[in-house]
Image (cartoon, rainbow, N blue to C red; front, side, top):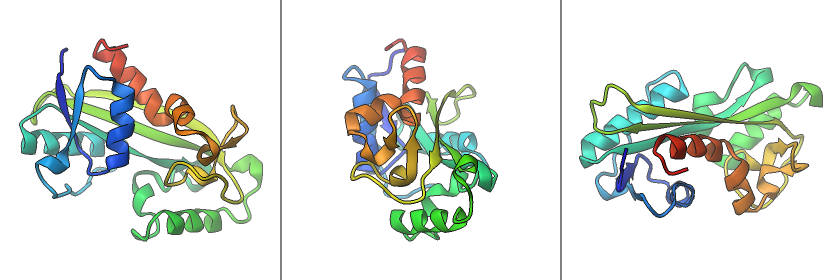
Amino acid sequence: MNFQQLVLASHNAGKLKELQAMLGASVQLRSIGEFSQVEPEETGLSFVENAILKARNAARISGLPALADDSGLAVDYLGGAPGIYSARYADGKGDAANNAKLLEALKEVPEAERGAQFVCVLALVRHADDPLPILCEGLWHGRIMFEASGEHGFGYDPLFWVPERNCSSADLAPVDKNQLSHRARAMALLRQRLGLA
């Protein structure tokens, strides 16, 4: 499959830059913000459903093949929460509030039971009604720390302990995170599927 241009179903400039760097120069990634400021309602009950919904919406609006990413944090002790609600876990009050709510929920939980994974599902559709979306999933296993650490990243990065590096995700330089993260793992699979690997 040969894609010169894809529209990314996100208004997040950081995500656009991160995914463009992972995709490489052979595919131009454009923001859905060029075509519309309206965000679709994420009515799916899973990362897969929401990624497909966002990709179809972006393809319909732009007329281009579309790539969507749905990602979040799944904490074992919380039965996979915050999951698809990761970005709005604390009622849309932002990263600091989300992190505070998560620390509070795990206040009495011992280290051995604080396992978690970042999840990323990428969905690529050739057109809005594509019956065969390309789906790639990446998981990044770690655990939730007792307090925040690190200056990089966003979201739950300051609370996510990366065992293979002995630090938090927010302690990693962006170039290192882009090789280890859930998004990097899903993107590596997508690059293979597109023949870019």
